[in-house]
Length: 68
Image (cartoon, rainbow, N blue to C red; front, side):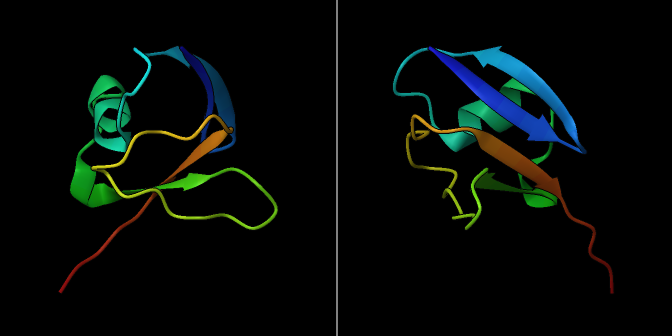
């Protein structure tokens, strides 16, 4: 299945098996799960927990930074 994924204003088409989770997407993009938020790319963005299947909607990955 194909998803439209935007990260840092760059949009890509990503092919993953149907039923793939947000964590599968993060791993496919070689990102660290603690450093990103996965959300629906809509006017009202909704978080997608890493353990849930990706919705059939455009996806946005937001890079986050944290420190102490």
